[in-house]
Image 1 (cartoon, rainbow, N blue to C red):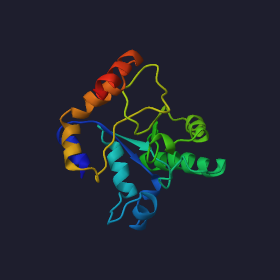
Image 2 (cartoon, helix red, strand yellow):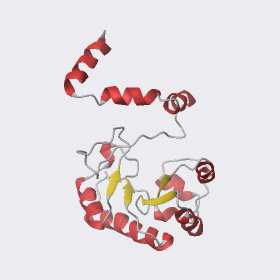
Image 3 (cartoon, helix red, strand yellow):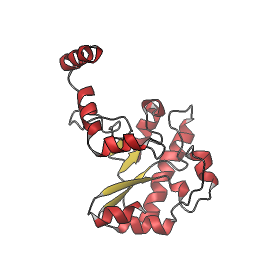
Image 4 (tube, one colour):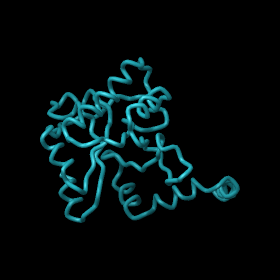
Length: 187
């Protein structure tokens, strides 16, 4: 379990948990996470214990890990976002301040969902669009880096050894540098 490894090295973390996975069966993974294989989901009690650890926070992630970029009604969006936060706060007995978009790419966001996330009382929402933090940035489209268990081991190695940091830094340079980098890349 990743929490014990993080705890051993005193590394804080936020776990973004869809409230519908608590005590869920194997079908949840296949239907809602786009994954095949066997899954054991955390129980409500395990989530509650995790939230009590001072190193860890729990964040919202919709009830059913639903893609918020899909064509959903306002009622569906509200149900997934509001009920998820409410249920997680009940399980953890703690305020839930942060949200992560399921799947998290630009196409998985919707303006209406962002408005509901803000209205629900979240302080920030995270995508998986790689970026550096900026005081000028949109707190409800905050970027973060992400790897999948399905990514090749060489990508994990490059990422964990800082190789991705340089690539991301170069991609986020201001426009004159970005233009020069584009020219250098073509050479």
